[in-house]
Image (tube, rainbow, N blue to C red; front, side):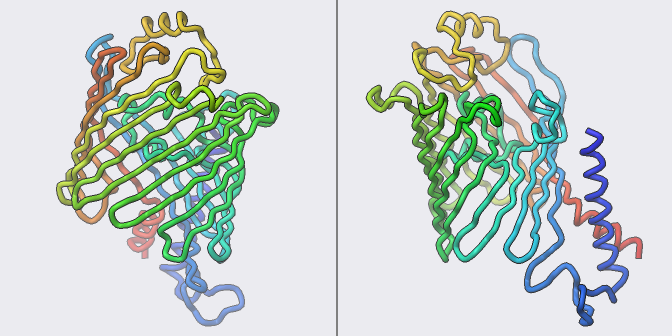
Amino acid sequence: MKRLLTFLGTIFIMAGSTVWAQEVNSSVTTAGSSSGEDVTVENDVDWVPEISLDARFGYQHQSSGKIGGFGGDGLLLNIDGKIGKHFSYSLNHSLASSIGEDDSVFDATNWLTLSYDVGNFTFTAGKDALAVGSFEYDAYELDCYYDMGSLFNYNLNCWLWGVSATWTNNSETTAFAFQAMNSPFSYVPKEENLYSYSLAWYGMWEHYESIWSLNMMEYEPGKFVKMLGLGNMFYIGDFELMLDYVVRVADLSDGLGKDFNLMLQPAYNFGESFRLFGRFGVEKSSDDLPYDILGEYLSAEDKVAANEENPYVMPAYLTGDKEYIFYGAGLEYFPLKENKSIRLHAAWASNNYTKRHMFNVGLTWKFDVVNAVKQIARKAK
């Protein structure tokens, strides 16, 4: 944590120094230049990084178990910037807590990437999200309402180290990406020698957006989970519809009905301020699968016992004899007309396993660090 605080302090000082030099000393120029031009822009490249702190706070209550109270739902640091004309970097790090067990600062890092752009191609290395064809899976952490989602989404290890290559067409409506990464079934990545390979298609048009993927994820050396993800988003005026279907299989001869999740989310935007949405999903996971996302491989009896002891809204495990049906609705309000940096929300969720209800109201905000430093510098002139 001390290293992280030192790092943040350095970032803020660097940002403040850069802005101060721009605002106060107009004679500062780039090395070898006598033009007096803005040092942050060279050949149409903005060198000042985008730095933000994103946070969410709320009150949550569930209908049974006497569970409820105020609390934070996340505090995330985002840094995006350029290094030269062709290199760019991106960081998303959770400041709230460490997720892993080995005291590494990377345990709480969602993504940390360096990308090289050349022509229509982008090559990326570092820690990144596994390319899965699902808009639920692709959503930003602070935009998710936990008890309203699939267990697959919340239990599959998303953030993995590896490399990828992406080709984008000239109109930027279609992109194909290939990834080679550690496997989400690898719990000691540098030792277990398990990998995943993904091919994804990203499409973006006025009325339709897609994330489709084919994934091969090694759960034992030489044994793969084959996954097909079909994420779709439709836009018609102020109405939008998300339709996700993700199916997994270890042996194609077993058919496609043992392990899948299907989700439908309609939403309507009332201008720029209000958004009303609902969600309905179905998920199934059989007891006889040769792989286990959690790595626990419990018997059906142990899963039932764990569900009976579980006090929360979402079940602890899915059992093969019962499909998991989950549903919910929510309302989001954006009080600032010029941007969506502040959001208030109210959400409800339930399911057929526990039959409990979750109620959550809260506030999400994004603090633009660089812009704040610029404002301080202007007032200090």
